[in-house]
Length: 562
Image (cartoon, rainbow, N blue to C red; front, side):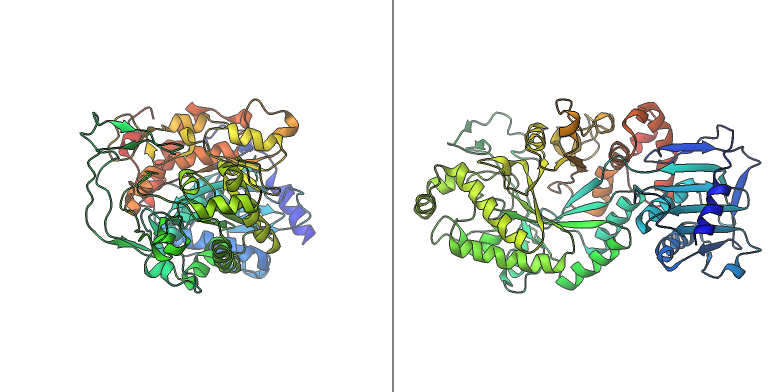
């Protein structure tokens, strides 16, 4: 095995001397192109994928499936050396002696062979994604000519994440798997699955069936943007400690169409297994103590308003007459622990996201139960109660061998000892957490929320804010005010796709692409290699690949500055 790896290294790094452009996104650490067109490799029906060991079979099958699906070429996979001696072959190697960095890989394309290797399975999988992006962006069917090149590559950040909100609009298992494939193509390694929120509970919990019987369904969805077109002159009333201002006479229209759905535990297991084959970890999010209206519709006794009949909201946002928070009580904590126990049993991820954001304190202030709970636990104010809530949940999650992640509001009142902070309200929360030596995932709204408009005059309904491709690309996840030592706590970054105005897969793809390309590059590629004009040149080829893969994106990118 060691001899095989050494041979590949010797063959693979007979570096070439030309300037043939390689259009891979995210940009690799090192690319050395060969001469073109004389020095190329051709894949045809006789090409063999040589899986040298069992731990290369997953990448071999993924590559073969991709080529068959998009180019109608069925390649043979073999682990028998005698079957490849006379064939042009793609050789895949995993050798744990090759690199100390588990994500590092190399690809070497010669006229007679493609060699790809890493010290781990996931590193080899990243190599196959680069091979995929070397393939022609048009379906030529009979043969695929790719340029000679040597690539050495590894990621800048260990956490490279993308989020999908399935609460506001539900997406079926088929699309979730497709979404995971999008992430795999871009060498992302974490999928943040936002499974619960005010507008729908999407995961089966066997102990509490009403969560999906009642909480997974709502009787309509708001039409248009809140507060709604034509309501520009309404008066606003600011409530004490409100999270957001509430229009006192806004016109709200809903479509009256019942919407919902949920994933069974068997479907969850299927998606987890699918992601694992793509070396993507799924982080589930169970929101608390706010964004819990779907839960309260199912189990109203856990709310702060006695005898109230809660409903799954039909409109978005944190408007006070439509939201509430969980009541701090032993009954509530036992309920949440039971829910989390089932979630933890399902997901192998080391991390559980517990939300923690936008918990308006007015509900606890007006609740005699909450006020008594604060007295009993010597909590000076509602911010301290928020901190107690997060600390208590963290202790339970830690007993299960897991670590919590929360939005940056979990800093309020004091950060839980082992928590990871996801900084969305700008960088301030992330900076504060890093200075306290906590891991940070940077996802500031202005750059990392892909539900925002891509263009000032967008050709589709989107959240009112503006986050163009260039802003995403030029963002650096390490805030300038951090010292070199503090910057080590920036684990990585994440893009978020909230689905208030994303009701179907085509719209999700439209909002995602090509901002996912920019995100992948700022998280994978070296900071010093960032070059926006160069990125746009490579993006031209990537968009053609999206056409081949039937991915929806704005056609304005074909003409606007590309």
